[in-house]
Amino acid sequence: MRLCLVEDIAVSGLEPLTLTRPVYELMLGATSLGSKLARAFGIGPGPQRQGGVIRSHLAGVQRQRDPHRVINDRDWLARGPAIVANARWVPPADFQLAEEPGAWLGLCDGIPAFAVVGPEDAVSLEPNGVDGWFDRLSSRLRGVDVGGEWIARPWDLVTRNGVYLQRDFAELGGPGVSNRHLTAMALVGPSNRLRVHETARIDPYTVFDTTGGPIILGRNVWVQPFTRIEGPCFIGADTQLFRANLRGCVTIGPTCRIGGEVEASIVHGYSNKYHEGFLGHAYVGEWVNLGAITSNSDLRNDYGEVQVPLQGDPIPTGQAKVGCFIGDHTRTGMGSMLNTGTSIGVMCNVLPAGILLPKHIPSFTAVMYGRVAPGFPLEQVFETARTVMGRRGKAFNDEEQQLYRTLHDQTRLERERAFQRERERRHDGWAVARPAVR
Image 1 (tube, rainbow, N blue to C red):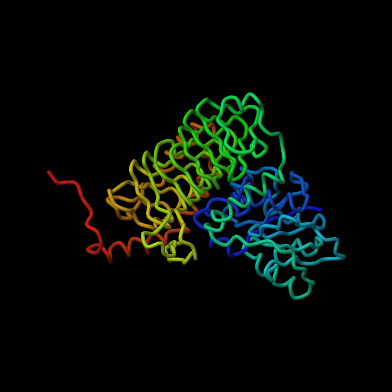
Image 2: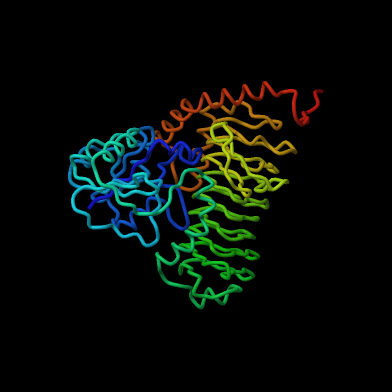
């Protein structure tokens, strides 16, 4: 059997994280949503076994990023039966694919989570048409409740991350921790909750606390002195921790540089938070740089429900602890203070102002003197991206540029609405200090 991961229209509710990646590449626990689905269905890697039907503007760059998955290929869909799974669905821990005769649907909360179909149905899948495809199948196929849960908003990933870190530790297995590593660290809690890759470097004066959950360190991780790691926690390959205080329910990496305090957060690969500052209940994309002492609030002063302005519209979260959500290639300046429930798009330049910054920062904008303003020209932003990625041996190639040009067009209306709101409240709210004119 083959596995095809698909995106429905609700993927827009996970922006800004899904602006630059298919939903199946979002992290939850120690692995991506797509990896969890492949493991649940027992499908191994490789283009003969795994494919995807995703938004068209992502197809070109995704073929380069993940050459082992066939993307938006009708011929591949026509080659045989397949499991077509909505990548926002997370299977339950005890999931086993039932041996049902013929084509059928797996349901979660009454909504199709996946379909087992022949090539005659699979071949009709189209990008941006997944919802209608499942609707047509629902009218003629029997459905079986399979449990699991849906990921609908960015904070769903953050809230559930600790649970899935523990679950992934149990399901993934692997070697534990060597005596060489144990002698270098101070371990609080049971050692059987600690897995450290043999190539990892653990310096003296580091503390690993497994009393609250397991800890996994990947290949070539470097933990420098005066770092404390509390479980559950996953540190991806080639990540470096500099005097960091990781307070549990944290997923980081690969190839990140992390310092300061991090709590209940997910940080995608190649992002940096080298210096002091607090990051809590947050989800940070790739190639993000958080300047020194950048901090976010994750709790209102009145302990009330947090709202997050996704695409500019405030969305109730039903939660009191919600931090920030930051898109790829965004940078913050030294001392930036992010408000509770902040949403920042891709390729933004956020500068400090001595006050809490706007909660809604659309893609390709800047924050100047505490207000949302037009960002730098695209070519200048692209040159920065080339420099940043080149330092890690990666290339900001033509496909990447085309993706961001498309996103620039797609997010234009959101920027215009934000600029209009700034004009309307120009004389309201906190006074903003401006440089003196000489």
